[in-house]
Image (cartoon, rainbow, N blue to C red; front, side):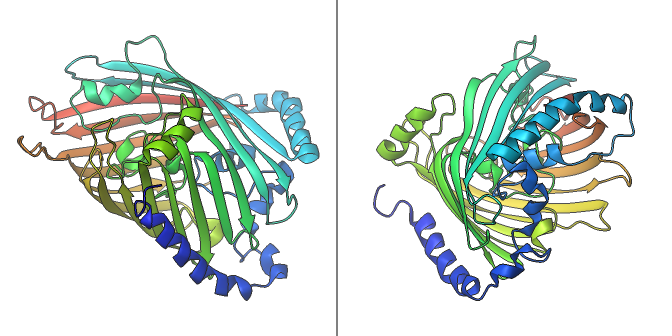
Length: 440
């Protein structure tokens, strides 16, 4: 690493240890198994060998946990789930005997726009295989585990994948985040180690920083919002999956500190090249996040956090260095409503937007596993030094995620885009989408 380039990670790591260690030294290990202590929430799935979750709902551990949980399915053909029980029993047996939990899913997304500069429809599919193996500390809160995820992202009968539709309609952003035609890629392959009853955890390897940076309760692009302005923060230029490391510590019972760095030139289609890129170019993305949650169990829904990031210049890609900050607030009310407000600022660095403000709400109908989401966003595109300032963009999205039966859900969504920055001839555009997910 070039001297001084990774100051963010070093400073935050030192601060983390200095703040967390005094608290840990006073912590009672016997209390770690009560519902009020950090780390205990993940024990509900201990029989499934899922490691103590580092990332958010869309991470491998979060997805395994969600897929293994019982879903309320009052819709058609719900009884067919019973026919698949021998397979799921086999999976559970492997996890119980070998501490190896695995899953797979197929996701499909179809989108169409009412107006376009080029293509106006797109369809794509993604098959994923993912899992964890926990050879160390099984049955305790101090586990060592390997997490992996391999994906194949492809088009489905259209000239473009949904991730490209935004550019076709003159919109600076993504109307669908993961649905590209990247082919076969490795998006996770890392070691996670938990210490001090999971109050301190470290990951290192091939990571996806969007799994854990500026996460909130409606961040999952497989089941929640489709547009990038709501599923991540568009002012954070998160790199593609590549070599990286992060450390997370809990301070007291309600605060946490997260810090990390990763290769700014990550290439999941060639994960071995990420090692050479990381140590040769020394162009990295660094982040520090400080946050509050009401309880460890509700750390993604009841969450307020401030994220700071800095990225080095990417010489080969012609992207300047930059920095920025993001603020996020969400709080679940009566176990049914999840309002959120998220804001971000970027100074160069290749971010899609240099200013962003999002607000919305998620609604969880009583007695169902469904989710209704509504969001509004204002975004200011980056300005070119010698060019005219682009118009501010406004984006709205409404989605409904319906659980058909235990391992199948579909999501319908509508996106409204006002003043697309690269299509000044159009005052507003509509994008209609349908997404399906089947897990195995």
